[in-house]
Length: 598
Image 1 (cartoon, rainbow, N blue to C red):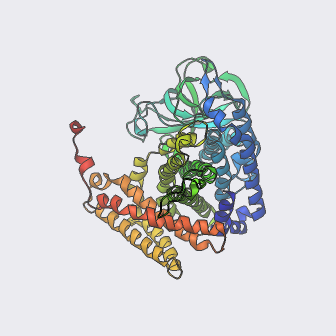
Image 2 (cartoon, rainbow, N blue to C red):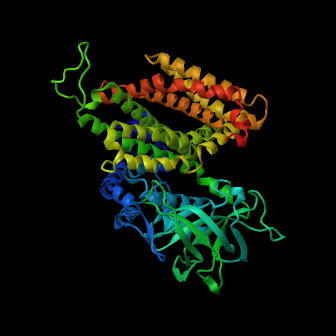
């Protein structure tokens, strides 16, 4: 993996050139590589050996506290000590001012080694980054800096048992208690939050929850929809303005742990806020400090959405990568079957490694095309985040990033899951046992289809907003980039693939127009997921073609990249026709079928 990662970063994306920019001027290609070396070492020594342990000894609650293996404590604290929690932050807050693309590349090692163990850090970094963008100076000093230092960990508390992804239906209530508290306007929160990863543990001395809740209107009733949603800092243990624990427990309690099929090493919680188990200040109600202005909670939460969705996509890629490498290693060593000749099989001849069978090579090549293509996608998007922060053409970059983010999250979640499924199949019967790691990779992977929004939500975002916003500016920005790659490829042996990609791009554009030709959202969006799948495959074909053009050597590594690119064009890109067909004709079946028919 490291050779591929270095190639994509430095040969394809030219990450070393970022050091010419003021923000990254103190770095070099050598310091970037040193960061990757450190991450790889910690992941190899502290995370990977205990991935199965975190799965089998999953968190349990004894009614008072949550128990985790000591290895989880050791691994997460080693991550914090590395400085990676604040990797992309300014020097003056203890950060390293790394580019996003290097930060993501470093985190790839942890996702590959033990994605569930790494979950605590990802949540904490996202929590603190949001506070750096939207918190007051004191909130940044007290909460964000201590999270970046690894003293406290953080969570995101959005979903509720009755609301799920429909955040407009949340019912957690926030009543103003003191407008002038130094840590921010102080409210009392009551409600329940579900599916809260990292919501309870004792890895760190405190947990900082970022909680979405509604402030009631003048009539005392909660405002329908999203307008009344605000964001609050709710610490597990109360602190003062000097970031010292006061010794008082906030009214936040664990109602129970959710036991999922994967990601078992990350606690997943139902949290009760304000039920009265604890009484800070002598009364029930969880104390929370307002972030930003009332009613702007979702806007603040969406600040971190781009990087969070890239992070989920990257985690999906790395689980796929782990399965690919495990099945590749197995296929090289497992002898089974003999060559088929015109005269039949010679039973007396030695068995050959299963990697020599064409169908096993098909499964391995499919995995290679999914995971290496997915890695290119995530790093490309992270590179765009750096362009947005430090580059010149911000409008074009933003337009391109907008349309790629739903793909960055959803495509690896679907196709690297397929990669993990193929890894199980390569191992045959052994793949279905817990004696080999590939079944755990599949179980962990399956959760990524719902993290940071389901395929359906991403598809609605893509077809319902991103490709039509600003007169189609995002789609035009993508088409321009794709066209540049096509023009370069037309002058090479990749001309046939360039023509195939041009046709695919035209198909996507045509289907987009036909989907919206009646102007009826229900008609246009009924087949949004097939549209998302076709769009994603087109993007991946473009990236594979671009990567193939960057491969110049005559080595096994280079030939492997070219083979994966050819596989994607031969076996994957042709699938988009069926997906776009139902989009273009606005197939009404799923929209019109009556409930009773089921």
